[in-house]
Length: 219
Image (cartoon, rainbow, N blue to C red; front, side, top):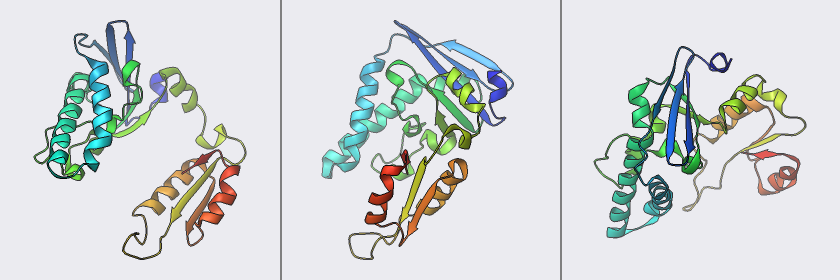
């Protein structure tokens, strides 16, 4: 049943950890594969370093920026090699992957993991992130993914659920005229979940403040 819940272009990658042992399973419409992962690595430490360095490396300046960027890119690729590269070698994932994390991997943004060492550590926009190769989504568990897949997105929620905002800013030296891609992203989200959209000159602070309390999700 779970396999049938997956789209033909989806692969579910599920991690399971118990004590010092941890496993990963890759499920698609046509196959199920699993493997036991190495348990002799300081996973919690590396995850902590990955998250901490991710938040600090881009905002540093001068020589410290280069140093922190090198540390973060190294940690990101190390984490990729430990937790995701073995899965990609075991099974060839579909273009979209559903990640079910466990243990220290909960809260890890897999999309920012690096598949290869960048030529220039501080040029973050050009890095080979896993998010450039695969579409990603997350599930708390395989069972929950299955249950949610049986419902249409719009039928899961009652009342006012989603308010999306695609603003334009006044043109000056400090603010962009608009947020690139925000309108397209807002339209794509509303196509899935419905809801109301504030865009352009309608997306004012006053309108947002007045409407936001009545919606469950703000985008």
